[in-house]
Image (cartoon, rainbow, N blue to C red; front, side, top):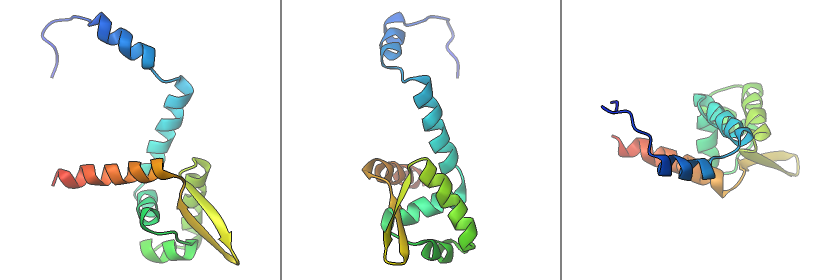
Length: 115
């Protein structure tokens, strides 16, 4: 739907301009959403929102090879969406922080409310 008249609300535009994020931040956020746009990575993220898991656990859960899961985890790690810690010979993955957990939870709630 489009306005029937062309009018710019200068005060609204100014308020938004004052709070506009930097181009670098826009780019970084866009990269995060691109990564989350992949169904496999979304399954990984959802799984990690429930429990810390190793690559083998994730491979079993989403029915993929360990190397394929590792590839996806590398992308998520580079974007600081997941983190890992070593426990003995195991490497456990989890979501990086509560912001990521909140983002995943909010997105899931949003799509489930629409049903």
